Length: 95
Image (tube, rainbow, N blue to C red; front, side):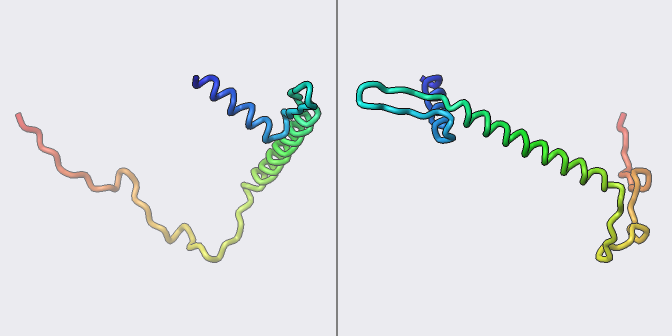
């Protein structure tokens, strides 16, 4: 039953996307798979994905450039403690 509902959901999704169309001329019903629409949609998705990758690559190549930001305090004013400087609670070992 779950498999049938899953298949119905997939067919409905494909119909909403326009990849599957249904027609009925009064005598004969048909289900059409719109391969041209599928090809154009997938090509558009691939192109948009490539554009995103190219944009991320351009942004990544500028990662070494340090932007000037006057709103941020200099890092030399910030104090941090290392693991060695943190206080350690005394431990007792009972025999």
